Image 1 (cartoon, rainbow, N blue to C red):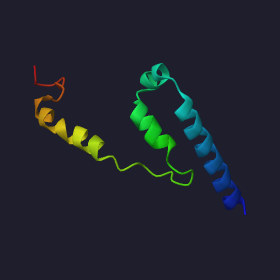
Image 2 (cartoon, rainbow, N blue to C red):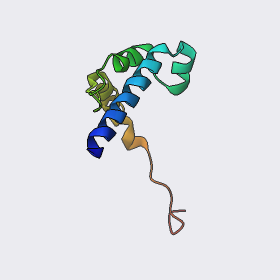
Image 3 (tube, helix red, strand yellow):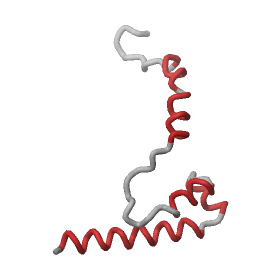
Length: 82
């Protein structure tokens, strides 16, 4: 029974957080790094849906930066690289 109660408490907290997210000002959302669109998307999810969002736009942004990874050099070691 305690697992059920824990799950219910989690759902209540998720619901409360999503409700608060919907009410946040643009300034506060910008401060925490969330766009209004992302906040609305998250706030509209049902309380039982607590898994990550499948955001294809986010995946596109992540893969678009892979081309710069080859430009990052590994740090110099203290032995022989100087």
